[in-house]
Image 1 (cartoon, rainbow, N blue to C red):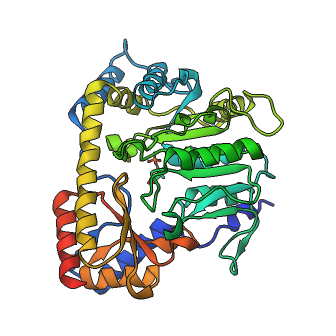
Image 2 (cartoon, rainbow, N blue to C red):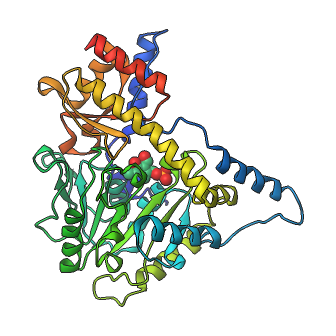
Image 3 (tube, helix red, strand yellow):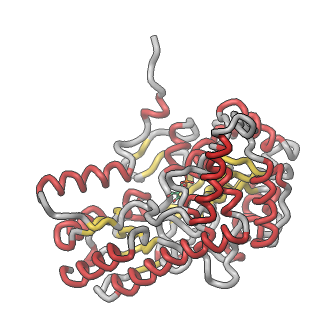
Length: 408
Ligand code: PLP
């Protein structure tokens, strides 16, 4: 008899964003005709830019002709895209990574979820609290944790690294031992960006504990503060203890197109193993379970990394950063304490008067018709906060700010 996965069944109720969507739908049914100003999900809204769109159109044309048609590509990704990424890291981050270290994917989320599968079940994961939910949920579903414990508000067997106002939302390495450490900077949901010395502390920890860092750099192009690293490999020694996951979603607007990458250096070491094993296992995993990213998306990715493409991406990022600046100013002027929003599209906003995240979510929806994301959905340290997203058309962002100013 087939039986369902016990590990999947350990996962608690609805995933955060479907639950937000469910509550918004229920509110709309109660308030027919009223429209919701959405500052909730981190979904891009602005169109794909001309140079990048032209490259994808050209690829579609090639696919329509017998002489230029191509089917499956390499599971690791198009060589030209892997080389372009290697050059991009050299030119923009000053780090040397061979193109063979890059594995192209259909986005950062699936890689962030799948990477745990190449580590042993006994590997102890550590995540910042609050965190993008995929890190915790994939480790639960992958059998790396115990069940949910109501009292400690977390899954047993997972080390939580508290990120709160006392440490400016950047956790320190844990006191306890952990084997796989998930970091995301600029951070979703808090918008915090880590300095070199803060990241160095994690690299030192990883060396000391024989741990591996999984660094999610999906928002690296939002960094404008001088000196903030864009890649974990800007920290000395990271190439033998860190995997980095990147995405074209938030800079090229590929949330729907789907394209990302994961860097697994051959020099990476896992506890007691020779360098190269983790690289080989990820290669094996991709070749076995993945048939390569869309060739149309990859043509777009190559164009996004060209000088013209980079200009376009940074102009798109600039648009959302200006939204974030307006939100920081506008939400702040309502008397709410805000964090993040400078090197990030997210503004981490403290709920007023000690309200809970979901209570403030309901109040914002009822009074201002603005939807945000309750911080408690990202972990217990997110309680008492909401995440405000700068993804939206400028006029909608301005309407939401005006509504909050008028109704809060
Ligand atoms: N990583 C972080 C931290 C994110 O916030 C998101 C999306 O919101 C992703 C990854 C997903 O990226 P992708 O669209 O490439 O799957």
